[in-house]
Image 1 (cartoon, one colour):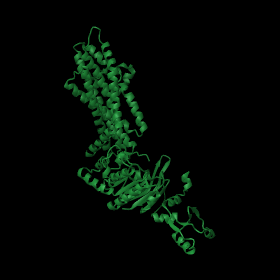
Image 2 (image 1 turned 90 degrees about the horizontal axis):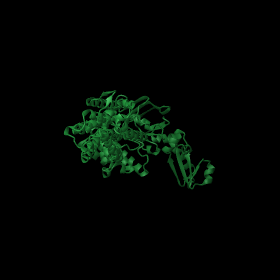
Image 3 (image 1 turned 60 degrees about the vertical axis):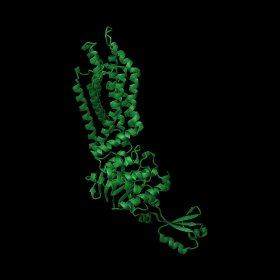
Image 4 (image 1 turned 180 degrees about the vertical axis):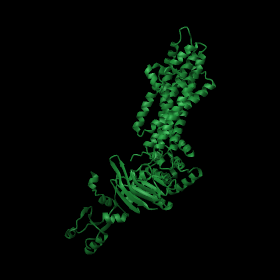
Amino acid sequence: MIKVEHLSKNFKEVKAVKDISFEVKDGELFAFLGVNGAGKSTTISILTGLLSKDSGKVFIDNLDLDTKLDEIKKEIGIVFQNSVLDVSLSSYDNLKYRASLYSIRGEDFNKRLNELNSLLNFSGYMNRPFNKLSGGQKRRIDIARALLPHPRLLFLDEPTTGLDPFTRKRIYEVIENIRKKENMTVFLTTHYMEEANDASHVVILDEGQIVAEGTPLELKNQYAGDYVYLYHPDMDLLNQIGIEYEKIIDGVRFKINTTQKASEYINKYPTLFKDYEVIKGRMDDVFLNVTGKKIEEEKK
Amino acid sequence: MKTIFTLTCRNFKIFFKDKGLFFSSLITPIILLVLYTTFLSGIYEDSFLSALPPTVEMDQGVLQGLVGGQLLSSLLAVSSITVSFCANMVMVNDKVNHIKDDLLTSPLKKPYLAISYYLATFLTTLLILFVALIFGYIYIAISGGFFFQIQDILWMSLDLILLTMFGTAFSSFINYFLSSQGQISAVSAIIGAGYGFICGAYMPIASFNEGLQKILMFLPGTYGTSLIRNHTMNASFEKLKDTLPSFAIEKMKDSIDVNIYFFDQKIELSIMYIVLIIATILFLGLYIGLYLLEKYHKRKA
């Protein structure tokens, strides 16, 4: 669906995107991860034709961005980081005016509105001014706006920033549901690493460069490892074994490279493993390990 | 065409739904109306009376017609710019709030967007100015100076449309370059405070020194003010012909910019129309040209 080759973009001295290449397959949920300022939004702006690139090639659905931008625009929908709808107008008016940009009017619009309402369930507040809606309600309307033209490719630029965990979860459920129903490719950028857990493919961007890519499992296995959590363990035995551990409330945790290693410990020291869990590394750990950043640095 | 129409409706609706924008657009016309009715009308009356020989007595109705006509022309000339600048803020807000990003990720052609902003601003400004014109007629009628014939009203309506087209084209061109709330405030303040002086609305250009007069004659707004002033005062000047000789009337017209001169050459009404039309086409062309040249929307990362 998307093919990016050696893409670069500079803003004066700032190199926002540095020679990146990647591919997004048809129908997959593609996650583009990075902290604020990593170059995610710049890349999305280039892919959607809002920003020029300095070098490289971009193909969307086999259409060259340099020459077929108008055709590409008919294929894409975008949910921006912040709502970009008209705050003084109702959700209905917002959707009606945006739909007309794709020549969706009259009966066609009403039909599409009903379809989107059945997916996103916004009829209860459709006639309320947009600025009177809650964050979650606004996001639903943003998504509905992006889906108006039946896009084959949906860009989600940090769609859950500023939303509470419950609403974030609901939004992702809705997106996943729509992705399956409408058979769309979803290009997700986020700095909440855990949101990429369900992605088919993940690319991690740091300071404008791709620093890692793969499926979430591949990345976790390669960069995060597993953690063993022992609750109320026999500390003497633990110290005797000589495992380096970290104290946590009600116990300790220690890192192992593979899940196999956990099995070995359990078989070898069964008395130590009375109350325990083995947890796969998180995407946060992947990101921190990949980019070499420590939590302390983040705090600074 | 349907897309332009829909976008124009959207822009129009946003302006009237945004109470801040709507009321700020009315500030200049309301301030001028209050200022004129409470303060400047007396000064204008004294000014007209002092220009007459002591032996001549001017009909009170004609005097009120002249004063009202001058006030109305000034009000409309200034408001055609200030209101259009306010109405055009929909375009600037779309840019500042990144709404333009959303619009331009659709297959929308950029000139269509530019034209929709122009049309919405034009219609909004025209609507407000016509309301101001009606209030002006009521004020003049109450003061006893309403001598307008149907052709005067038609000419004034045409002038108003032309002034609005010019004001909208000018504000569209200037506002194209604005991209922050600070810039919006600065430009609004400068236009609101300054335009009335340079177009001869607050004070006749004839009362400025000769050098400044020559400079102001290069600005198209000057011709717009004089054009509409000709038509708002014409009926009263016709009445005045019964009282004053034509040379005295011409002198009076010179002093209040009904007659304007470009390097001693009197400017005919037809030339005023041509100047305004050319200026409108020029600014509109530049404005749409800027959108056409914008291969990529200049989004800040």
